[in-house]
Amino acid sequence: MDATAITTRGLSRSFRFTVREPGLGAALRSLLRPTTHEVRAVEAVSFEIGAGEIMGLLGQNGAGKTTLVKMLAGLLHPSSGEVRALGHVPWRREKGFLRRIALVMGQRYRLDWHLPAAESFEMYRAIYRVPRQECRRTLSDLCDLLDLGEVVLKPVRMLSLGERMKCELATALLHTPDLLFLDEPTIGLDVEMQARIRGFLLEYNRRRGATVILTSHYMADVEALCERVLLLDRGRVLYDGDLGALSRRLGTHKTVRVEVAGPAPELGRYGEVVERTATGARLRVPRESVPEVTARLLSEHIVSDLTVEDVPLEEVVRLAFASGVSA
Amino acid sequence: MIALAGVYLAQLRVHLASQLQYRAALLLYQLSAVVEPVVSLAVWSAVASARGGEVRGYAARDFAAYFVVVMVVNHLTRTWTMNEFDSRIAEGTLSLSLLLPAHPIHNDVSDNLASKLITAPVVWALAGVLSVGFGAVFDLSARRVALFALAALLAFVLRFALEWMVALLAFWTTRSSAFNGLYLTALLFLSGQFAPLGVVPVPLREVADLLPFRWMISFPADVLLGRGGVSWALRGLGAQCLWLAVVVMLLAVVWRLGLRRYTAVGS
Image 1 (cartoon, each protein chain N blue to C red):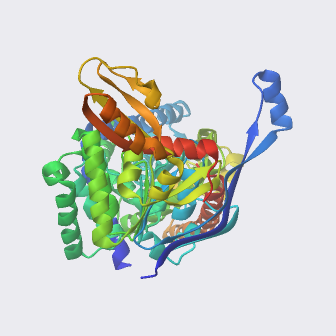
Image 2: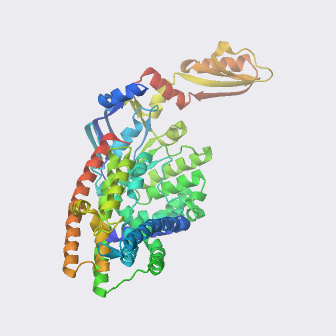
């Protein structure tokens, strides 16, 4: 297997669309002389992803995440630049490429609504030309990992959202793809189901050495799965690298939670009070002052509980976009 | 080829299982498909009676036989991708199917065949009832039935390819239903569905001769009813093959252009 799963160089994608003011007059004018605008959804994106890597694609709405994923999977033709995935040019959608990839989009389903998932598995087995025995083994693995059991025997319309998503994942992985695109795979799921799906994806990546590209609004997904993140801002790469390093670079503060015996005293002199409770507070404290602040808190008050936490990833990402951090 | 047959079998199984869930809806569709030929049949029979028994060689019982067979042919060759393609684009299901290592047309063919396998007995039973009710007479020979089977098969493939191509216009317009409406109107009048082409005004028949529609409906019906001789039927089969070659070539071009647009514009 190649060491590199995906390479892009100067990958860009623009869209043209017509715009018009509201009203009948504007509609008529637009008919005769349409005004077109061009938006650059993805601009000069260059990166490499090694085989077996899990990369998180982060960005605000409209940052170009889905456009980028669609170009990598072969659903969109780039406006300029180069992209190669698993040695193929994705937009040619050669069968040899399609047999090695899978795209899972949250809330876009391909299982037949009326049939048990098990019935559709056979169809996808034939389409991907997976030998029967191999398919049986893979399915049994997937059913174990996803704890599917009898779920695959119930009509899809009878399943909960989480069960349905698990069946969709099993369908997408039936041909054991080497490259997996996940666009918001846990959207709409409850916390426990999100955790299960994350655990499953990690295990799949470990067992199969598959490369995974993940876009998600849930930072918990990203934190649990991705060592590397690519931050997109208005189509451009804002940061490409280690998630921990980004967190250390931008996490200039830590959160100190303190609870004291009895009513909470005034704690503002130890740091910025983010939240106040009856017996304590949550403080935002500069990273370098944390040892001194905790020592003072412990010596000056009867402390019943004290914890120090890194800034949540949501805030790191928000800071990254606000400060325009670069790789 | 064997792998593709496997794909077809697997898809057919899924579509059969899925469509059996919609038994009632499928039956209702078939019942509504009967209304049109029954109305045409009643109207043309009345016209024949008013004109002293026949219209350009068609007596009332000939109209009955013609419209009963047209109903069967129409059922055999009907497709519905046109009604669905724009929503596949809008809802993104087309994207998912483009990432499968099998052309999406195979899935549509399987879906179509599955529906026909389920509904054919109903349509044929209805054809029997209508034949008896309206006094249609058939003079069938093994050779005629064999020629009809071949003509109906070619008609199905031709109509499927043509209507799949019309469905692809959804790549270029968000209002593809307007094109579909235009197409269906042309089909109604120029295919022999509304009236046998032998009784329509000459200019309309001349236009019909230049277009592929008649080869999709009235030709197989005329073959079964023995409207022409064997050599006429063979020439017709040749015309079907010619049209099929043209439409398949066009379809390949339109599909390629459509996909280029789809992957250029995005969805």
